[in-house]
Length: 275
Picture 1 (spheres, rainbow, N blue to C red):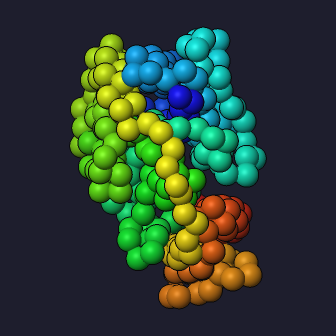
Picture 2 (tube, rainbow, N blue to C red):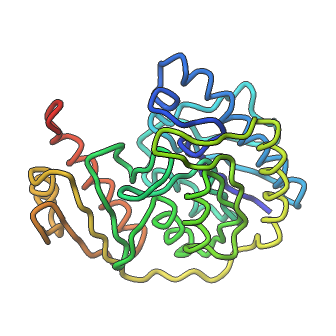
């Protein structure tokens, strides 16, 4: 059983604030250890449950946050940016299950450091008419490849979101949201135990199934009109409102590639403090 971990940082143990996840800050250096601890607990739990190989895809920002020197030696790690499938790179490599570790809620809803791809600027994303977090988007891609989501870890809001888009997956709540920048946190020794236990339980659902590629529609709403107009320059992307664009794609994989383009162009169109 070969399992993939898609590891984001905003939903990791102890993380509550911008400086916790911005590479180069003192707080980021501290939180890297917490993040790595969460991953190691998950690796241990997956092996407890029968995994024979664990592959970690580093999925946050620079995608160079986890401490390789402290990583469980039974795991391998893909680190660095510019991966075709981004957070889900490796989902098409024959894995038997995937874990969404350190995930968070989407733009426009409550949750610690809630956002969807861009830290700000995006106020909402919809997949086939349903409000979508990164987790929901990534779960749709996993389903296309016949890979079950075994476990989702993050704050209580992210785990409640996961119960909706992957009801059979296990969840591990490592903190309780108070606001976008505050949470009631458990110490890493406790969250590690929880993550390990839930990862082992999640392995009961491991095993590929027959995936199916189907068409999808994605809509993205921004906080300023010029960002929508910038994104609408992309072929197949159309303005659907003053701050909203939409596009159709033949598969979820193609939808996510197009979404990456839309977010990259919008990020490039942000101008100083006015956005």
